[in-house]
Length: 298
Length: 298
Image (cartoon, rainbow over all chains, first blue to last red):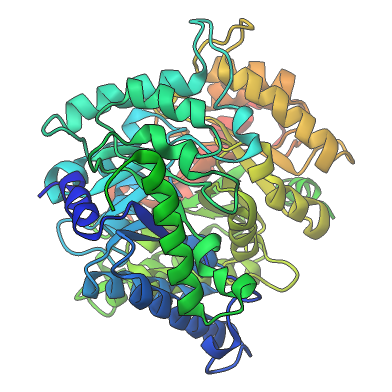
């Protein structure tokens, strides 16, 4: 089964488009996660693990996939990265699709080494996930080791096409001599790469990241890339709404994921609930918000 | 002492502009590095460590800095990353400047986490180096946590401005409506960021990566960015020569580093020597090649 097919099957069975972002911060996590205190990096990392495991178990039937942001684990060195690997393993046990938010990008044998670490091949990689986010700045040849894994190991990749931050205008929105914006030019390149590396099926395994904070671009880019699975950050805490992402869906499940991190994982703080209760309530609200605008049946 | 001042001091005392790239590959390393065999990731990682330590000791007086490429260590999981951290520690012991080739790039608190991991602050980071390579695709706000460390902790950063691979034309060389190429536009942005974050001294702490395989761009970009330390990959194995990089230097030591990885670290293979002898001979040849074209006194 291709990566996109796996996504659609999971979305259908859970009736949900939610991607759970796992971006732990030591000052935002419930105290009862830190069973070993927070005396050193090892203890804090263990707290991150407890936090992630509790959320994954509580939300396993409400979210399709998880997206741990590796930077937050890398900041705690080897104990942090051990926990990062444990979270990917836990996702496999819970049958949750895993998207490694690594945003790596490099050339030649270096790109191959990153692909091996995070998508495996021929053997299991030490940090193997089902899909990864990657950075396109270095161009097509830097992406090929990842594209190969889509073809050979049913993996998925998401290229950073138009990010949700203000600085995305610095390069991504520059005006080209062709009259296009740079991100539109990149979208065309991605369509070509899909043709080469992922020609089968309604949806390709080569997807894109486009921020929910730019709803017009979502519509525009969906037209240029009808076969791309979208990964949409910026919902919730960054201001994106169900209405903003509605243009992505037709009246059927298409493999587009709406990411929510803080708005689910730290919901317990505003709601005065347990970690699990807050996350479940916020996930149900999010699902309703998206479904009502996309007119999908609940 | 600012990062650039440290670079210049080291170059003056060693009369060398060489940056040693440490990109280990299990099939290219001398057998006698693998004292524990190569049965698993731990044994291979130990071989990588032995390889790096031997090279660093042999070349400590001939190279200014080291640049371990983290992907090759990440591919071997936690044992690989432990060795990566050990190499940075070894560099401190040998008074070699360390440049972490991580090419990270992300937004907000994620960028902050990467900066903390690799440049530290307020405490020592788990993978702390003197400088890092970073990816500018997400724009200025994504780079600020790194720029702050230049200001507050005397660190350095290198932005990927024009890389040495063929695919660099996909985005970096697109033609803008202004008549410029995109990399020229980025160079202008970098000049602005230098003014804000690193206004003191002849040289800024915000540098650039520009491939030796594009000598005309080196000249052009040096004119736009007179205060940027350059990190120039592509010398040797990728075809760049001393003549290609000569335009960077005047008749004095400026903080521009010429990277050589395979051409030094795997020189023993063609030369039929020990690891150390091959690397030393290749480093001396490289030094001579660069110095004769830049007319610096040996």
